[in-house]
Length: 81
Image (cartoon, rainbow, N blue to C red):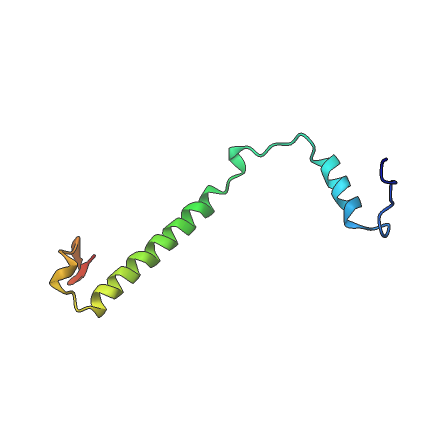
């Protein structure tokens, strides 16, 4: 026995919107050109900069102890870890 077909709760329901959207975008695929590479690069650079800064700040708070190991290089007289 099949359940009876029921109309949406009200005419402007989300079901109607989803049905219209699925009809409109049926068969479309997203190509690699849709990826915003500039934003990906920007966010990655910002995350790397914050992590590097946090590492340097932590080394500074620890007084650049010998146990931290040698810094990668010096920049304006400050060791960079």
